[in-house]
Length: 275
Image (cartoon, rainbow, N blue to C red; front, top):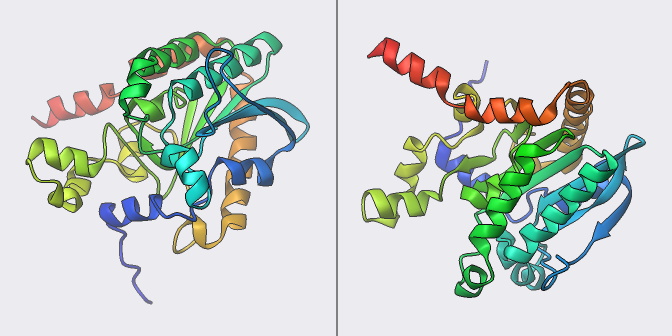
């Protein structure tokens, strides 16, 4: 029997960053019907790096949110290569408020290296916009299921990922910063990014073991981009199951708060026992 070579963390980072990797736009097309898109934050502008709207998932009204990198250079530039501005997070917040008002579950799809770091974004309230999303998600009475599709970078990703259940694609990554940033801070050498991938615990397997995520979504050989249709079938089945279970929660807000407050406890206890 041929032995399958394990995929290194650095290789998973490369797969997560593949330009053709399935994103939120593909999810909308493959999984939902009757999608109606929201535009604008009602304060300043529209940010195409965040896709927001309402749709039907197997006939059930839901709110859909996601970060997108765009297809092709023109869209990449318009979406800041998947890095949302404050307007994008305020648009997401607007969608969350409407979901709460009309009792719609929220499904989010994350693929971002992080929030846009430009000076103008900071001047328009980047940190406050992310904080507002986190605060709102912590109190939502409707269930929220988050899916990490590709990159999940820092607070820019967490701003849409505070779910009752967090799912993660097998070759996605989720971390407090990029491997390049990690290497630059820890070793003052960004060229050691591949080494950083091995110590950051950013893969789906690592994060499932640490109970940061709840479920790993298998991908076709070569990554989800090699057979998007197969990956969407896997995600469709998982979301159907997870949404059915989440809708039975007596108090989704309290469940979400307990989940995030307890994060890391089992790892700490294990560490103390092994010390």
